[in-house]
Image (cartoon, rainbow, N blue to C red):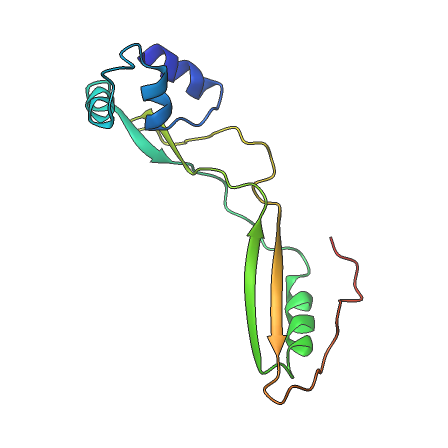
Length: 135
């Protein structure tokens, strides 16, 4: 079982305790408590995926200034992030590992922000759509 886990992790696949139980040869008897005891015996643990820190864009200061000019007359605003591909940040890997990586479909950062803004007096003031090209 440990060889299967190590092989899957070398391929970069994210593993959960449910996937370990499903793959176990003891399928009828395998439960979450068995899985955690097995992981403890084999020096495995649930780990968070790590990554490289994100850098700010080159012209982020100008973008912030443009955004502030756009919202100067807005009295209230709400923003919701719509994510298209939700990827788990947890996987099973050896205890003490410094870097934990997993393969993903590549769309985990693809998202849209939906912003709703309104004025208390009901008068619309602002742009319906930005004139700049959307990246």
